[in-house]
Length: 220
Image (tube, rainbow, N blue to C red; front, side):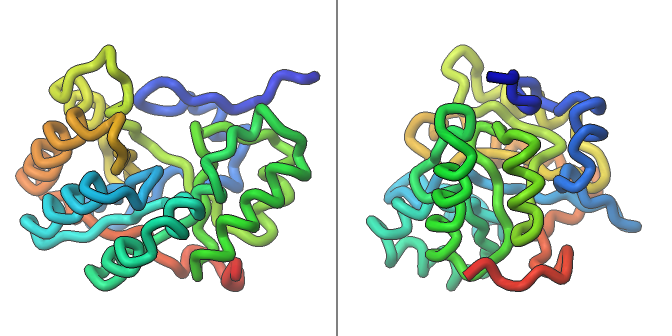
């Protein structure tokens, strides 16, 4: 089997990878300094709620890439996300790793997850996607990658490390990744408010990822 071409483990993806996959969305620079804070893997009771509370304390909203299976388990929490003005995208039905299944299995899992979310925004779990998968999926979805990942899920890092990952790489248009999950909770709850404070102090506008990036129809 050919080696998949995308595996992002550093705070910022290599430029060569972005050039190899130009139809994926890595950042969204604007005339005004703007960043987009995103969250993966929810909605999960308590952990997602605490993230929402943090964002609400700053009167800002974010973009949540939700796992379809979690939406089925926690529909009220998913509805709460939307009621609070957060944008939602899909993250497959059960956080499927694209490297560990066939292309057809992966594509179907993406569609299954998206059927629970009225959006064409999609982010591949683990940042892993094969070229053939991306080529097919971009016909229906805006594939949202990232410019900066906090790595809050990494148990070898501290919350301060995660904040510094963002601080050292953020720029106009950055798409920043945190996780509303149990695994990332401690680091996220430390790094997220420090990140927001830093961004606001440096005159960044924090926005949701817009749903009108392209003219694609809804995935549902």
